[in-house]
Image (cartoon, rainbow, N blue to C red; front, top):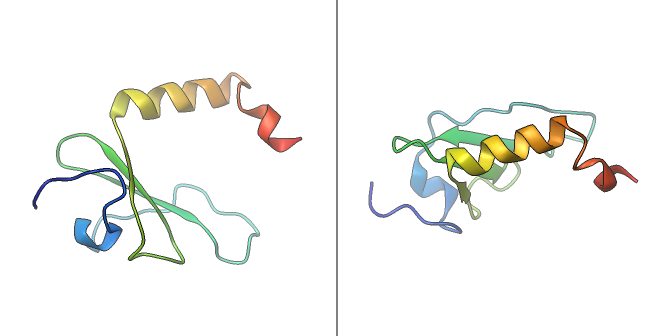
Length: 78
């Protein structure tokens, strides 16, 4: 795999290994994630698998999950 960068085509990361860690009653619009060989995590929209991938470090993902569990993202629900 060539250079991995934020905003690259998600399909360029391959078709294997994408998972839906959560899904709701949203008509099939889900976020899919894939752990990359270097430890980073890629996100894509399930309805647009050729669209852009957002790439985050493991530290960034960890901070987001910890913050969400602590209620720091609750403002997004109101």
